[in-house]
Length: 174
Picture 1: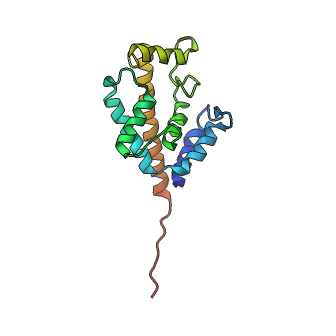
Picture 2: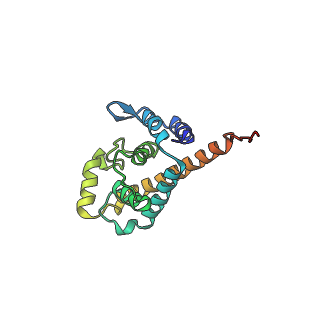
Picture 3: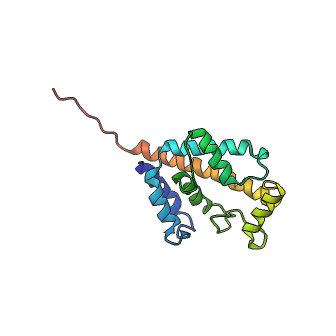
């Protein structure tokens, strides 16, 4: 769909030390970025940016819900479309996790848990309704802030690329 999104993603991912990290057994972060870019437009990115800001503003009311679910739910309300885990926007979030300085190295549980127990930390926070309190909660908020900044940076790159692309002008020949 948008070559400028692919170019901007390529630029962001190329500086990422985890660009060769395996997202799946057959796909690296870099490969995912190149495959998802053509499916996204600046409008998708703007919807994501708006949804992330809304999640940030309403985070206190979601004590036991993970970020991915909050973002997915908010995106569905903003865009009136069903957004599932494999949707390009959700895959874009997966890519952005890897550039966060505290990334756990686990795509399912990107927020680090004590002693490397990421899933356990998530499950305990979920069980206790403390997803956004304490050190673990602080890290979740920091990840959300990172996602917001990363998405805004991507939008800026796409706009810069699109402003440099030559526009085609057609003359009417009579």
